[in-house]
View 1 (cartoon, one colour):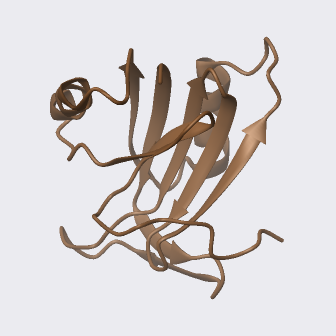
View 2: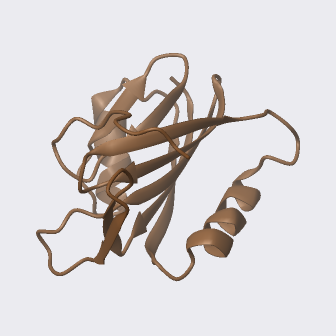
Length: 137
């Protein structure tokens, strides 16, 4: 699976269903993330909620306006006050473990990705399984 991932690691941990949000307190706290996947399955926006291991994925219409720069600008506009760091990782093949490891090693993160075949790829901040557990309002 080929594409690139815009990964914004946030300085908060939250629960969408319980409407809770807290600042990260230490190295052991797992952060929420905001991610964009640009690949053959289209452009996807993925939001993870660390407290419940919840995730919401949204298919963004393919259009010339949906670009890497738009994703980064959108992240800053809506989450700029809580973005800890933002990365862009390019993948020729997400199924190639050595490529994934090298890409995440360059930015100092563990190479933990989830692949939803034919749709998107996203990074998880811990070993837990992330899945959609709540319904966006």
